[in-house]
Length: 230
Ligand code: C5P
Image 1 (cartoon, rainbow, N blue to C red):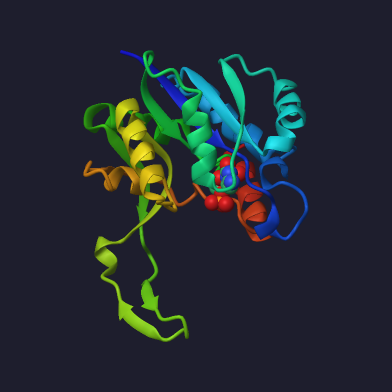
Image 2 (tube, helix red, strand yellow; image 1 turned 90 degrees about the horizontal axis):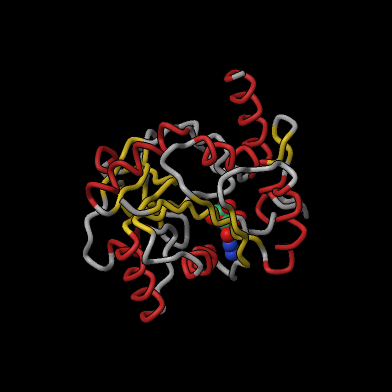
């Protein structure tokens, strides 16, 4: 069995949260968001090494901050790209294809992920080649026009809200990325690239607590969950 490499894209800027600071370094329970995330991958027995992607002009500074926490798994830092997919691609190019069996991708800004979910996604990808975490949609989801008029009401029972982690066999992700860049395709998640090359993607139940920190309200919610977990 080959290595399992975790790619942690953390090269986004903080623009959506309305602050000049970087979401991945916001303090949560006394530690930066990304430290919570990396601790979960450090704890997971499934993960052999981690690749963290930072904004190109911040790699030196941010990697210094991570190093201060003394993670003992092999961890390397890579300069990201303009879009999240570019950042994942840059990290992927640093992965050794001869040694690596699976690549697990997880947003740095989902710090409430639990080791159990990482394990379930990895185990499923080991069997199927591609697996993602997702939860049932609880709200009704409608398609709307550019003028904010309802076009269609989608069948909720077939809808899932997709999260990370997402895990793929190395050759599958390589082919998916190659095809996406050849076609000029950008997806909003990694598995959409894999779907495009005709590979079935297995869905593993995620967690409603595995939120992506996007707004100040998310930070407050995450603080509460961390406190409740002790
Ligand atoms: O912007 P979004 O919320 O989709 O970002 C999800 C994750 O992707 C974040 O951890 C962010 O830092 C990362 N990202 C990245 N490179 C970009 C944009 C986002 O690594 N160019």
